[in-house]
Length: 90
Image 1 (cartoon, rainbow, N blue to C red):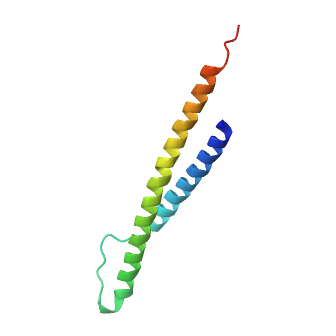
Image 2 (image 1 turned 180 degrees about the vertical axis):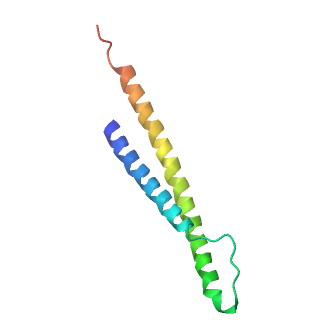
Image 3 (image 1 turned 90 degrees about the vertical axis):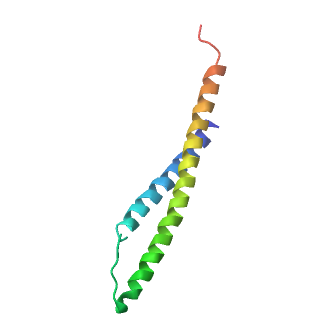
């Protein structure tokens, strides 16, 4: 039971780290302010798409972050329970 929980936790945490790295890479392309002329409207569209992707990744990051914490607490609980139920050494 404990090893299965740990495997799921490792997978969830790895996905979380990958999402955070991807978000950081995308956010480097984001501009705070854009001054566009008439011929540069495609840049505004690109920024809107980028902001949409960042918001989507943000939602998934929160989900996987919470999942990682919950799994870590479950692992700690299962480990503590197993140690408490172990017969004492005489």
